[in-house]
Length: 109
Image 1 (cartoon, rainbow, N blue to C red):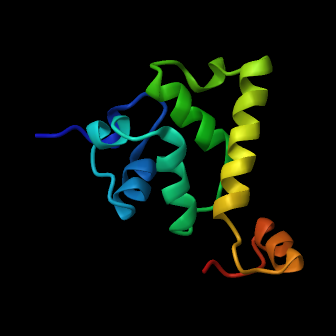
Image 2 (cartoon, rainbow, N blue to C red):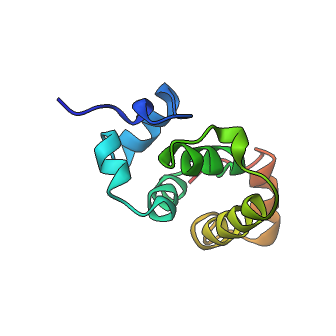
């Protein structure tokens, strides 16, 4: 039997459900993917991009606690996250709609 995504450090039942919606059903499935590609799938499926969730996943895949990410490493992950978000989130929306979506005013597509 395969182990759920939530067996990876820092990831819980909400991430099990989110990843299952995009076809990632086990910790083995997630580990087999590039973490940026896996997180991009979530964003493209309508999950709201969240930097802490992103770097908690990265740290967990490395077997590290989520709050172990600091300094230059965190800055580098922020740049990767921002690039993922820009390429995957709010496609087809005006700048105003995208800004309103950030605060939860515009419905998810």
